[in-house]
Amino acid sequence: MLRVLAASENALAKLLLVFITALVFVAGIARWFNAPLVWSVDLAQLLFIWLCFLGANQVLRRQAHIGVDFFVRRLPIRLRVLIDSLLALLVLAFLLTMMITGTKLTLLNMQRVYGDSGLSYAWVTGAVPVGCFLLALSVAGHLYNTLRHWRTAKTLVFSRAQSNLITGKDE
Image (cartoon, rainbow, N blue to C red; front, side, top):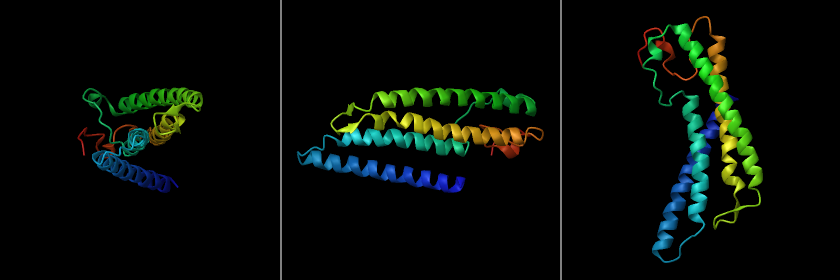
């Protein structure tokens, strides 16, 4: 099920990127012919916001976000797992706060019109709670795997170099 969700998310992100690129290209050509598509910038920005959240979640799921672990690498492995787990709980609390606040903002913006597109501004602000929900699912999944292997310290929440925990070397 998770693979289907990941594949669907990946396909949607690629589709959005292709659509944004085509939209910006067509809008540029239309402007060249003195017939600008005034709504194209708004729609491209809206889709780009959704694309950013989808991309952030894909990278988080693969544990490929940039991290600074210069000092943490020098700690004992179980302490690293503890710190990583506590950070995951902090991130989850932040994402939950953003989901709640983003939902409130989305509901407030239902009647507001987004630029010249005629779309509800809720489509823009709706990316925040949906994106934070997806990110929270990914963090919770990694945290679950980390806590499940707590005694053996095989995995970390935010590091993909799981096989090299003992040596501290990157992949």
